[in-house]
Image 1 (cartoon, rainbow, N blue to C red):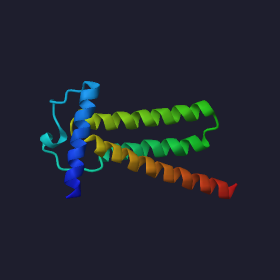
Image 2 (cartoon, rainbow, N blue to C red):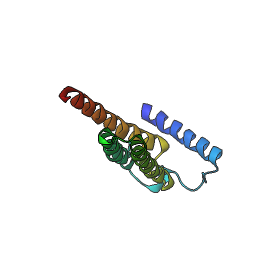
Image 3 (cartoon, helix red, strand yellow):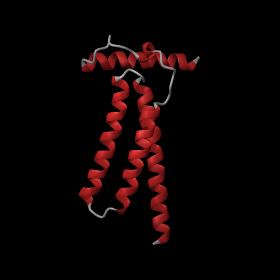
Length: 123
């Protein structure tokens, strides 16, 4: 099965990450927590989806450049911290969180492009 190989490579990635960062590798792995397989991470996906979409749409109506940067920085910080919390709690593999972030960021980008197209057509 291709997924079995993917899970093995994710375990190697996790082991490498722990050795490079000093993260306590023996602490736990997501499979030891008894959780069901969840790909992508719903928490990471939803945080990226909500916070990045709100920030992207809010930055369209905010005229100040520094305010737009601040809005996006807060949204990205929240998204990253929520994703990292999933790793810290050992409920997801890094690939689960990365896929959740990608899904949520893709959704935010789609809404940002749709809003820009709408604003372009009405002006």
